[in-house]
Length: 380
Image (cartoon, rainbow, N blue to C red; front, side):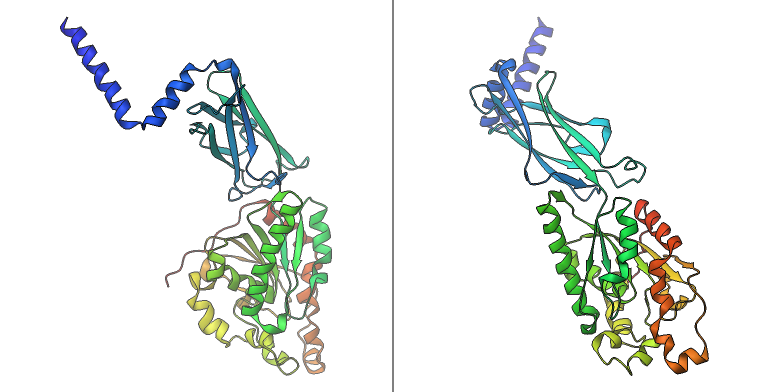
């Protein structure tokens, strides 16, 4: 008798807690769902943005999905227990289970995996996501293609998109989408960084108009373009957008170029002034920015030509952020007195030729396909 009384008291307490903790409408939905004839329920899984047909493989590039549960009369089934899954575990769904609200709906997030070249060897990957009622053979699925993160090329001083033509063709043949930010280099680094930020937003809209959703870009920046990218990715404007996954610096004068002082005799504009090592860009602006001018949340790599006429190894160095600069033999040593006196050195053939070197192309491809180090965090 005493044992029965204890069980009765426990049952009363549990029911009381259930009633106390759940709002009245939740209780009503729960009772209503229990009463449903389960074979009359229908599940529908859809994208919140139906315009998206493809997704870039990047965990930051999340896809929002909506699940709806109705009965055959079209009445919303609140409190329905829905379980989500991803075929072959390509990415994750969060949460992996949930109960619908009073409208018979719930929003979930699909998180794609980071791009892996081996997975994409045979072309785009198709991901299938399923929502099903718990312990019932009632479900709905959607499929969406995954593709590599798109590339944005950023050229250097007095250059344009043509300088990347060969590299762009090489990467396109390997499945990479790309675009080039053409900016007015004579206006200097700060103005050009604003142009880069606007271009990335335009690219997002252009890709989504084609059905491809991307949150981030991988940037390949040559020469002054690397400084423009550094400024943009360390600015307050960037913090609100966070749209860069990787930066691959190619022959970038991270500490300025001493040849800029000579160039100033020919081009007296903000762009050439910014490239001088003693300019405010290097002495005041970068040191006062996020992580002293190199964003520690963006994967980074650096490449330099051995005989580069514009950028010497100490200038290209990112050692203070623990990012190694890889040096490749490109062209011949043109640093002769005759070339200096006759002005041929200003043609900087090796500085440009690095963007037409097969070994460099192959290394850039590997850098795009694998994780790069993050710059070390520096004390302000």
